[in-house]
Length: 69
Image (tube, rainbow, N blue to C red):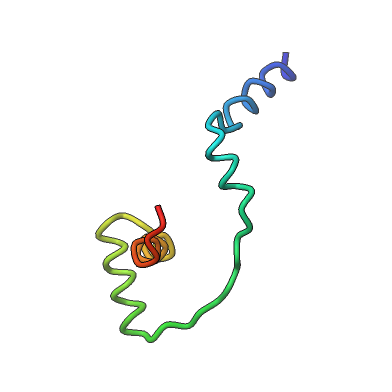
């Protein structure tokens, strides 16, 4: 019975939306950047207001700037 239970758990983790699968195939670029302290603090504050991580908030800003959906 444990095998069937595990199969059901796995089915629930597989994305049903093909768009999710397509975006997962895109390469992710991992880069490190250093921000000035004041800028980093402002970024963290604004991200926290929207209940986002600073990284996700910055990604949203860049998407708007580059006009990417």
